[in-house]
Length: 305
Image (cartoon, rainbow, N blue to C red; front, side, top):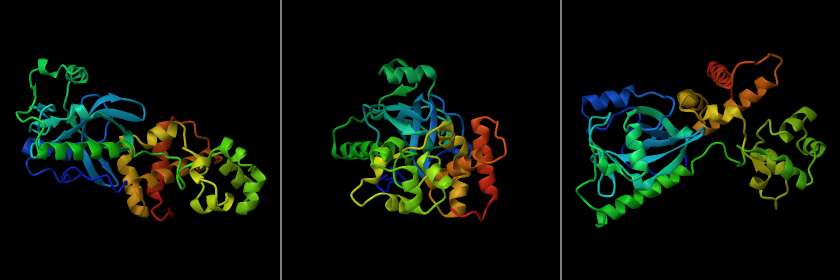
């Protein structure tokens, strides 16, 4: 996780905030992974750490748009919006002026429906004052406390916006065919420099295998910027590996192998590539292929990362 992604409060994935009434405690602990839907309130996380609350305003294939949400023990001031009736049993502050996009892999679990479709549309069009149950806080922005809090909140969610998987970085990206061709590298050169089989070199050159940092340093000279020769892994499996429905399994795989959540995604993607090259036919849909790969990894408790 980005070390600068400071948590806004003392949120905990398993322990509900102390200020919640019983109905809120039940919603916090009973929340599960689900298909993202507009208006839903989600708890965000990465590597088993709670990162904040977020209500979805738009849902896309691999990312969502939405607004930060804070609890009553955080400052609340205009022009934020307070929703009185919420799944947590307390009024929640929605920071509509801090709309941002987040990668789906940050969605930890759905707490419940916070906004109706009409309310989402109203907040998107800045017409929230026409709806009952939504109102602005009594306090206005302007004093030292509000300026400091808003600065922290904006900075925090901007940082979360840049937490992505996959990335074209050493240890996570694959070789870019066009870039390595421009660098004057061919299949045989990769094979000879790494002292691997032709099949292994072909898998690297085709982007079917993620090269290690050591392999990249062996292939390229010191004056080459490694990231310029890499591209993100792609394909329908990527969308499934960042879906909230597989997050808990990836956390289990990462914990078992002592690696980060995103490193667990890399392991799962590698497992999918190996399965695709096996002699066993794989005709199932992408989601089931990913499910099968995760099940195999979980079953292999001693499999090295």
